[in-house]
Structures are given as structure tokens and as C-alpha cells.
Amino acid sequence: MRKNIVAGNWKMNKTYQDAQALVSEIDNMVKDEVSGDNVEVIVTPPFPFLHSISKLIQGNQRMHLAAQDVSAHESGAYTGEVSASMLKSVGVEYVLVGHSERRQYHNEDADLLLKKMKAALGQGIKPIFCCGEPLEVREAEDHFKYVGQQLRDTVAHLSNEEFDQIVIAYEPIWAIGTGKTASSAQAQEMHAYIREELSRIFDAEAAYNKTILYGGSANPGNAKELFSQPDVDGGLIGGASLKSRDFTDIIKSF
Ligand SMILES: O=C(CO)COP(=O)(O)O
Image 1: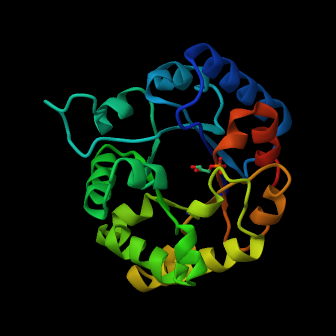
Image 2 (image 1 turned 90 degrees about the horizontal axis):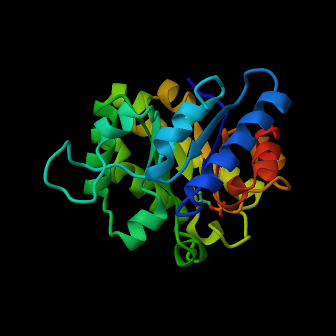
């Protein structure tokens, strides 16, 4: 079912101590300031902090835990990899797959992304599938075609049941960490296009029910307008998720 989600992607930031402090602050602010049950909050810390943060947020129904990556392999001789079952065993519920930084710096292609999604789904972990175009594609006005292809290359290979479990995040690369947010109109038209494309691949009801997040320089100043768009169901937040006040204010933007 479609729901409002604000997910913080911490990327490679914070030490253990700083991570504990940040998540305690977020946890308290969410408890004190966020009422009703119209928004789900996800934190995505680096691997070494997952277990302790899982325990810390256990008592807060609204808070959920995601990992930044998952291995495509089940187990065995894959030095440095972290499997879906390991993530599951420490309370991880979601995992980012297809983030542009993984695609770019780790050469993750559509094939690998599909394997990672399947590995996660096999353990009951929900993939947050990230898509989005680079600047030159936007400038050439090929962005719809580009994002449509990303969906067809990976998401289209999931079964209907698997598709039901995933979240989509649209993150235009030119807006990530640049301070240059997509306008609410640009976000809305791409989200509407993604939903339309998903309705062609799966069906209209499944597409309507899909949660589609926006990511890229989202902050407390622009979140309200972005989230008020009919096809924007929340955000995947980078920089602003590292500050408890900013992150909580974004959560309160619905
Ligand atoms: O990549 C992002 C979240 O995954 C967005 O990062 P920023 O919010 O820092 O632009």
C-alpha cells in the first residue's frame, strides 16, 4: 500500500558515537513532535552501526532501519560483502539498491541490481530502488527515456509479488549533494511518468499503490512543496538527514 516515507541516507558519515547520538536525537524528536501515523521514518546508517541502532529504535513504531547496500550472494567466500540474511538478523527492514553512487563508483549494472533486489526480497527485506538521470541526459531532454529504461532493465524483471514489496526513489544525479533541488514541478512530472511506466509494466492498481520518494538536496525549506505533489510520497534525504533538527522538520512536512 502507498505510504508516506522519509528516509535518511547517511552515506559514509559519522563515527559510532556520533551515530548513536544522532539517532537518539531523531528518535526523541519524532516521539515528541510527530503525531498521527501518516509517515514512516527510515534511517540508513553505515553497516557497523546497524545492530546498535536497531536496538535503539526498537520501541518506536514509527522508526525503521535500512542498510545502504546488500550482497547479491547468499553466503560464503565473498570478502567484504554483507548478505541479506545478516542484515535480516540485526533487524534491517529496507535496503537501498541502485543508488547512483553505487552505480557510478562501483560499476553496479542492471543485472547486479536485480540480483541484489532478489537477495533482499528472499529475506523479506524491502528494496528501495533508486533511479535518476545525470545532468547531460536532462539537458538533452532524454530524462524520461533514461529513467524508463532503468525501470525496465531491473524493476520489470520482478514478479508482481516482489514488486509489491519495493519502494522507488527518484534521485536526479544533478540534484544530489549539489544544493540544486529539482523543482516540485520537475519532481511531480517525473514521478507521474514513473507511475505511468509502472502501470504499463505491472498494472494500474499496483502502480497507483507504489510509494515513490524524491531525493536530491531536499531540505526543511523545500520538503513541504515537494511532498504536496500528488505523486511524491516522501523523500530520500542525504545531507539534511545528518542533522536531527533538519531531518525531523522534513518528517513534519507532510
Ligand atoms: O543521494 C541522496 C540520498 O540518497 C540525496 O543526497 P542529498 O540530500 O545530500 O542531495
